[in-house]
Every structure is written in C-alpha cells, then in structure tokens.
Image (cartoon, rainbow, N blue to C red; front, side, top):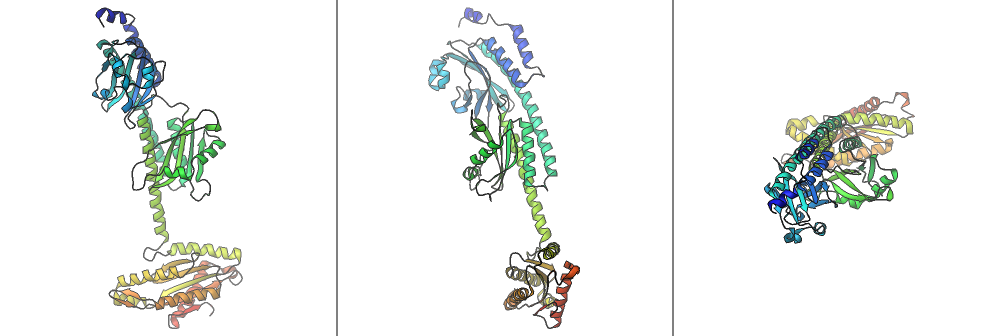
Amino acid sequence: MNAEQEQAKHEPFDLPRLVRGLSLSLDPGAKPQDALDLLVQEAHAAVGCDHLFLSRYEAAGRTFRAVAWRSSVDPGDVPLERKFMGNSYFSGQPVIVHDLSQYNYRLRPGAARLCLMSMVGVPLVTGQGVIGVLEAFAERSDHFSDLDADLLALFARQATAIIERADCEREAKYRAAENEFLVEALKLEQASLGSLFYKVGETFAAVLGVDGIAVFGIEPALPDGQLQEVMARGFSMADIGRLKTLYGKERLQKLLPPPGGGRKDLIVKQAFRQGGAGAAKLLYTVPLVYRDSLQGLIVFHWRQLDKAADHDALENFIERTIGHLSMLLGRKDVYATIQRIGFYDLLTGLANRRMFDYVLDREIKKMWRTAKPLSLLMIDVDNFKAINDIHGHPAGDAVLQQLGAIIRDSFRSVDLTARYGGEEFAVILPDTDRVRAVSVAERMRLKVSESQFPVGKGFINVTVSIGGATWTNRDAADEATGERLVTAADQALYKAKQMGRDITIFAND
C-alpha cells in the first residue's frame, strides 16, 4: 500500500471521535459488556476493516471465546489448536498478515467463506499472560499497515483495562460470597446434609445470576431414581421430573471420579429441553462428591451467559465453594465419629453407660405401650481383681476385650450389649420373657467358661456371674423405672456371687 492509498484509507478517521469513544468505553459507570461493545464499534471504524472480533482466552479450556464483534457472523468459541495465528499471539506482539490466501488451509471454513484477504491481530496481555485478542479482517489483501496495528494496540490496551477491572470486581464479589457462605454454612454444620446443600444452591443462585437452578441429594435406597429434590428455582415440577429421569443411576455413575484417582470435569454440560419443547438449553451440572461418593448434584442454566465474564474465574469460584462444602462434610464426619465415641466403649466396642441409660429408658416406655416383656442381664467377671494382680492390667484389658466380643456375638442385633462399668457388663433384651432370657444368659455364660483367654504366653479360664430381671407392665406396676430394673438385676447378681459365682440367678428366684 503506497502513501496515497494509506492516506485515502484513513481519511474518514476522526481523532476526537476516537478519544471520545475510548473515554466512553472506560466510563466506570458503564457495564463491562456495553463498554467492550462500544470499544469494538470504535475500533472497527478507526482501522476501516470489514470484520472485527474481540475474544477472551480461557487458559483452563485452551479456548478463545468471542466477547464482542462487528461482523455478519458470530465467531463463537475456537480451541487454541484451531485458532488462526493462535499460538503467535503468545509472543505478546501484534500479528499482520497481508495475504490470507496463502493460509486458506489454516482458516476455519466459515472464515474462508467470507473471502478474507488480510488481517491484523493484537493480543491482550496482563501480568498473568495473554487474556485475549483483538483482530481485524479485511476482504482485500495488503489492507493493514503498521499504523493500523498501532491503532488496534491502543484499543487492545483499553479492552485489557476494561476486562481487568471487571474481573477484579467480579473476583471481589466471588470472594465476599464465599466468605458469607462459609460463615453461614458453619452455623449449619450440625444440621442435615440437605440444609448445607440448600445453602450452596442459594449462594450459586445469588452470585452467578442463573435463570434456573435445582439442587438434589442422592438417595441410593430409592428403587427407581436416586435424586431427592432439595431446592428448585426457575424449573417447573415437570422439569424436575425430567431432570430426575435424565440423571438416572447410569449417568450418575459417570459423574464419579475415575477409579484409582484422577480428576473429573468440575462442571459437566448437558443439553436439556425445558418444558419438554422449544429450544434446548445448556445445563451446567456440578456433582457434589465427598470421599469418592456422590452426595448430590447442582444443576443450573443461564438464558444468556455474560459474554464478558471470565469463565476460568467463575469455575474457580464454583470449585472453591464446593471445596468449602467438602470441608464441612469432613467436619460432619468428625462430629459423627465423636458422637460414636461418646456412646461406645473404646476398649470393648460395646455401648457405654450413657447409651445404656438412654436405651433402657426408651425400652421401659415401650414396655408400657406394648405390654411386651423386657429383660435385663447384669454380668460381672469373677475374681477380676486377681487377674489384674497376677497377670497385670494389660492382661485384664485383653480379657475384657475378648469377653466383650463374646457378649456381642451371643445376642440379637435388637439387644443392646453394654459395658456398664469396670468389669461389669449389661444386656437389654427387648420383647424377651424370663424363660428366654435365662436360656440366652446360660448359653453365653457357658460359652465364656469354655473359652480360653490368652494372657502373655499362656491361657487362662474366665467365668462370669449373671443376675437378671424381667418385667412386664402387669407386674412392674407404677414404679417401673430403669433404675429399679437395674437394681433388681444387680441384687440377683449379688446373690449369684454369694452362691459361689459362675451361675445365673434371676430376681425372685
């Protein structure tokens, strides 16, 4: 292009308009998308091109995503490996191609059909690297000069400033929402899993500005579908039903991390026809996974996703929030473990005194309602002090541990076996009359006496004495309490000790 052609090409160029356009695009009160649309409009006029595209580069997905353009075609999303001159932009320098006919084999079919003959592209560069590119195309060869590259670079710097400012504001919003979620969710860590999931859904709905969101918990016991609705906004009841059908057991299985570790996509995209008709919408699905187990799903969609939004930052926000949720699920696990420790004896694995008192009170009330008998056994190790004195306390602990296993295995799952204290054990036998209670007590006593208990390098024999009591609502009268039933069984145990040990005695024998 000679000097006259260069001058003729830029005769319409209006410097005051350029300055005014850039000022408007940087107006703090303007929405980022509006500012970028205006900037692209002014850049299109300034360089006198046929098509102009502003794209953001998403490093995580290695994709250029169109943000604003002046063209008869929507450029859409283009993977880095298919982007014309894509890798060249990572040099950080403008790229000018005077004759695109030499590169037709590298152009996408849509671009080739536009008969593009020349282009200039300027990368958008920040301290973190390339975040996008501003590209101008002409339907004439040798159309762009160094001056065009300089002008486009000016607009590229302004676009970078707009995007960086919007990203900072959005990131601040995300961080504030995360902190608020964490504070509120910590208040719910003792609540149900559904309450936590509901709070995540509320956070996503408010921060991401979605047009529809549904949160589900997973109920593996359900025969047909495993999804249990927690919250839904922007989805009809019919849509919820279709979502439950869409995410059947087989599809849910695919959302789990691969065996042996490895990372699955944080957000899974799925086409969905809302209302069963009309254009399909793109659903974004976030699986809620904890310890390789699918706990729930968050499903949402936008009618129109903000083109200027930083999708990498959006996914990072979602990932951090789900990370906070996983931490809270871990805390719930810890609390559940603490509760188990609070109700079970660490040495024997049997229920402890606290659990025994709770269950006995419950069974006494049940006895009054159902008129069914309730039996209680109190079991004491004979001459346990001698075992400790002769063999030592570790040997005594080993005896209690083995005895606890024998007691646990000798009764039904509905019976409560407990370590009452020291070397004394107790068994609550719901719906069990005196004859049956004596039978199971004797069977357990004989099993103990026939067992060998390892102590050091040898073995010893151990025996137990058992006291029992059976009540019904007829013979317990109005004085039936757990404490009185324990006293009755304890007195029978004392009598068994008096009669020589290794014997079962029931109250009123």
